[in-house]
Length: 143
Image (cartoon, rainbow, N blue to C red; front, side, top):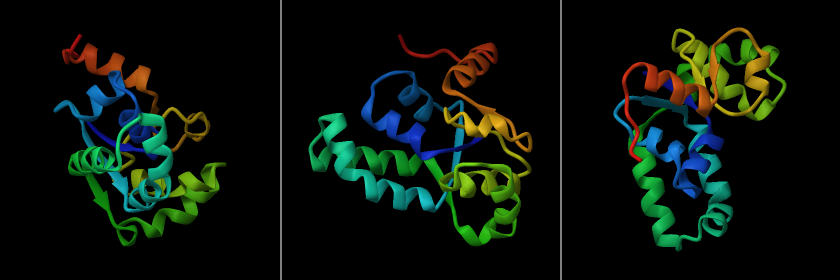
């Protein structure tokens, strides 16, 4: 399943040890994100370090692993959809995720942010919904 993934999901996967991390690293999904995601990672590294309890080196290692799981797309590839995305979503920090989704034939977005559900242009899946869908397709998560 191909999905645009937002930074909050990835931060949860970095900090936690639950199903979010299992999904991020599963072969059941192929993840896409705007290059803006890398800027968000850099801005939030100190917070990630504190919340995860990881050392700086460990945070870098996990970030590198996550970056290898995500196809990062440059803004030039979806910039013609930014105005449309801006008109559809209230959280301006998430415009690029929505624009990327629209540019990728309305690929579903994986996010727990409720404002993605308020727009009707693309399907948005919470982690709970995504896990349920993957299970219905036969994917098994580790216990």
